[in-house]
Image 1 (cartoon, rainbow, N blue to C red):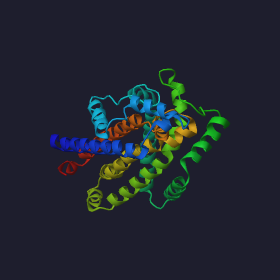
Image 2: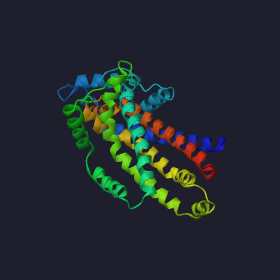
Image 3: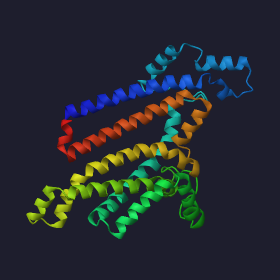
Image 4: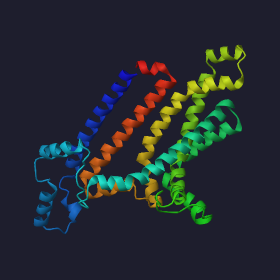
Amino acid sequence: MFSFITKRLLSGILLLAVVTTGTFFIAHLAIGDPTPGLLGNSATPAQQAAMRAKIGVDRPLLTQFWDWLSHAVTGDFGTSWRTFTPVNDDLALRLPVTLSVVFFATVLSAIFGVIIGIACGLRPGSVFDRVLKFASVVLFALPGYWLGIVLVQLFALGLGWFDATGYVSPEISVGGWLRSITLPSVALALGAIVMIAEQLRNSFLEVNNQDFVRTLRARGLSKRRVTRHVLRNSAPAALTVLAMMFVGLLGGAIIVELVFNLQGIGILTQQSSQNGNIPVLLGLTVMTVVFVVVINLLLDLVLGWVNPKVRDR
């Protein structure tokens, strides 16, 4: 197990190094001179030169990279070129908003996806199974922002059950926090629920038709115990999809943040891209890759526990 974890950690560190290095140079080459985006087109050449000196882009690119890297390995991602506050402060302010929505959406996806997937796997071809297939097509065809708007109209403006926009910290009010993240989380989770359910349903049916399951039935095991064995062998596929969904939900958070006016990392990414705020973009990149590495490591550990053969890869 130690060797298994070590290999996963080393591959994660390599991924982090490659992605962050590539992002640094690609961002600098794509944005070029960031001063027009930071000062506006009305800035004079003297003001632009002063800004370039202030943020350090007047130095050679390799020097800038080494300066950023030497601080980043200690957890210091520098200073925002827009607000001149530490990037870490910006991330600490925005990250709880996005993680609250994404984690809640992941929990909803896991619970309802597993329940629906098992129900369809136990009764393939039933009305419920056909509804799942229809829902998977419809939900993937509908844009996320449209679903968000519909949820706001129905449950926030119409019924008044939830907040239409904004975010309430759980430190202020737990009830307010739940009301503020429920609709964004549901908007994110709808597509993920049907994908997890569809994957689990297909995996369940595949395992259910294998020889060892027939042997278990022939030995007289109860339907509940057989289902438990089938579900255990079907779980890896659903877990893989769930982990992919978490990463995908992080990327899709910008849509719901725009619809529900949530000041999370999705909005921060959009704003930083528009004004060429490279230090913030790099901090967001490192943070996202770390999340991907951690989620994949946890997934491998769970899969290794469910299926010991995975540890031998």
